[in-house]
Length: 116
Image (tube, rainbow, N blue to C red; front, side, top):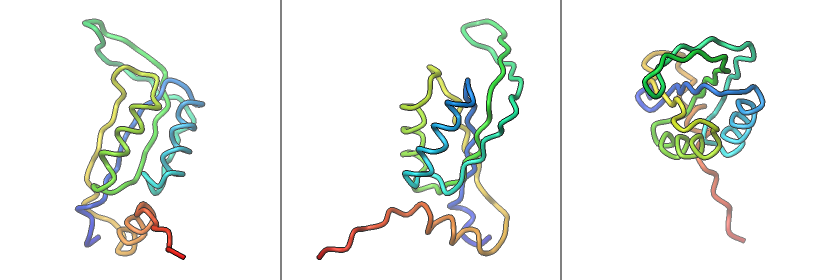
């Protein structure tokens, strides 16, 4: 993966499956992520919130995007998310197939309208 320094995997947890699907559909539709996997089976999360240990069933999103679209993706997730502090963890893609980076870049690049 030659251009892998530009690719990012973003992890986001959601309170409900409906919220996860809504975020996934929106960010993929707006080309902020090339692909969003929604883990439809709930995961159990243990975390500290306001000084207490909490436990919740959540739904995990695995998003693929580029470094250039990362800030805009984060802003969109924050606007759509129900949590005060949504999880938004971005990991670099350092290895992978040779064709994936081009597809990733092409898929999240904003298309420009041609002038008539």
